[in-house]
Image (cartoon, rainbow, N blue to C red; front, side):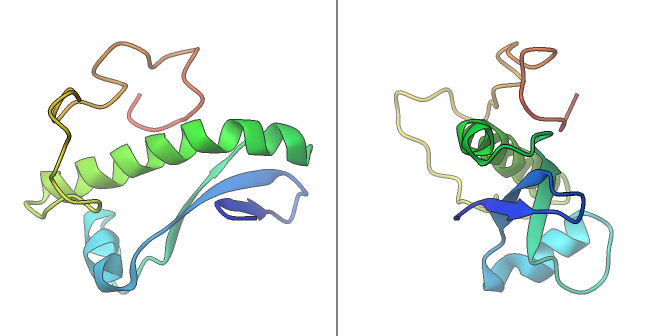
Length: 109
């Protein structure tokens, strides 16, 4: 299933695939040499239906995390810098106060 990976402990994880042309940039942003093919976060469930329900929120969080790390080292965001005019530009859901216990992800807290 797209965006999901089952780990060795049988729990499901969200998997953000990094485009081939940006893998070296993302690895550098995470402070590691080489290429970073994906970013994983546990969904803390063994139930596939629950994992599918949780996946989209965590993938959005992972995209924000990767973009923030890239911008912090002076590189363009992974998914470009275009935003629709109706969207709050440059702000993640964490900036809007929706992170914390209700946030499904573990990044940028």
